[in-house]
Image 1: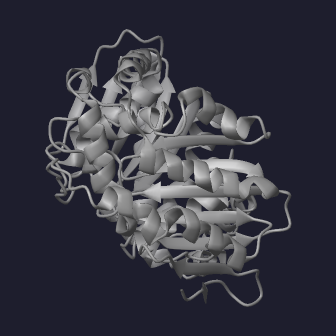
Image 2: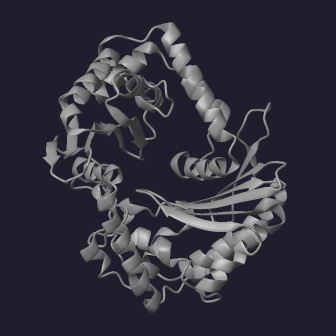
Image 3: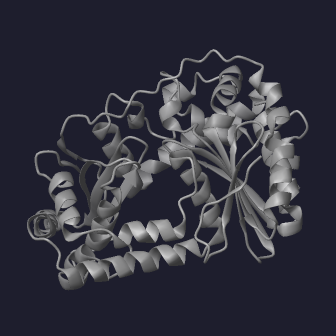
Length: 424
């Protein structure tokens, strides 16, 4: 196994290797007493077989409900009694298991995650209970219109593709999922080429790779790789759907508005300029353009944000705000005004330099969180086959030009491709 440095020599390196199973593994050594590990798999919503919406998220829940070796109580107690924790989440493209433990317990965390993916039994009695939990989760979205509007927007935006499927699933399809189908899905998606293991902690790369090989090497996979699955996988590209402009009566206290369009995927050269643009327009900082205008200057909204979610072959860029009904038209007018500014006039060198400095600062602060770094390493390996270093990312931001920002503003926010969804 060959270990490669992937960061600059002025920083502590991330070590990247390929285990005997073919799975990529990255290790970042720190001086912290706390260690983090994450097992990231291309097993998210878009990879579910047709007719089984919610299977990936359901599997995520059921991984904790018992293995050949452990009952659910023992799974929940394994790391928590040591002061650590294990958790999981599902996205449109990934299913991620991740754990936080003291450095001396890293091996226990890696072993537990291995047990969950290789030996889960998906007991029927637990499935019935967990299905009800997920159905309650789906129903609870009605009380959270800000979350619901994003899901409904993407359902319409990516209509006709697997990207349209809500992560939580569709009730009627959830009800027909069986234990056998879960086992098949895990066998078919949890294969080395679809997976990446990331480790951040006070451990040498050599020791970390030894542990990784023990629990995720070729021998560990042999028990499930020998069993063929039978679910039909669906992997079409997420092509843009038709444009829409819709209003729904939801009876909410506030009026909610989301406008946006399909955007660049992870491998598109325009991805970084769009990240910068969206951060300037409506990023998390209080000085974001829309926040300063809609909230600080006119007091029309409590929340306004611009977001960009890049996926493997497509993306979504949108602007959301919640306001009182009578202010909807004024908020949309001001939002359009800001969009038009960036689509018609190139940023000055000073404006762009300030925007770059802010984005770099935000990313550096985020990168200082070792758990976030661990999860980011896993996604990077799945998306790019390597770990994109902090320095590489900063270099890409630094290289953005005013012309690039003007171009993405024109393309993404062209009125002919924009969609809008309003909840009244």
